[in-house]
Image (cartoon, rainbow, N blue to C red):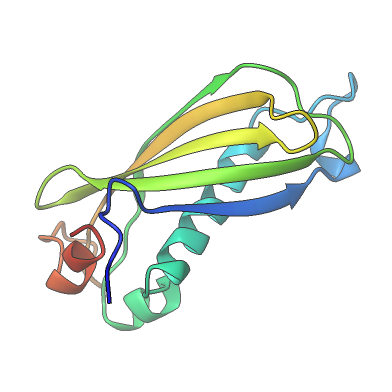
Length: 138
């Protein structure tokens, strides 16, 4: 059995733009991309073998400590959008997820972004990434 190297491990999550996600101009409101990034991140974790629920039950949380998005083109109501998610370990304490939002109909890149997360324990104290989390990136 071969495993995909973490730098090549990517998941794709499909989103259909809902009317409530658009603004008065009919374009997806900027903050919705961060919700989509979260969908991509949770799907990446689930597809690579560990989900947030199991992580939290084990006493580990990965709160966002940095979020960034570059908007290239507006998505509109009823567009099908793919959120492509990749992950990289930054340090013994932090991980970064990188995202691309692509309109499925024409392949147009809509946005790119990343989030950085730190591992904390049940008491909210920063902790080293547990081996089970590190293993997802190796």
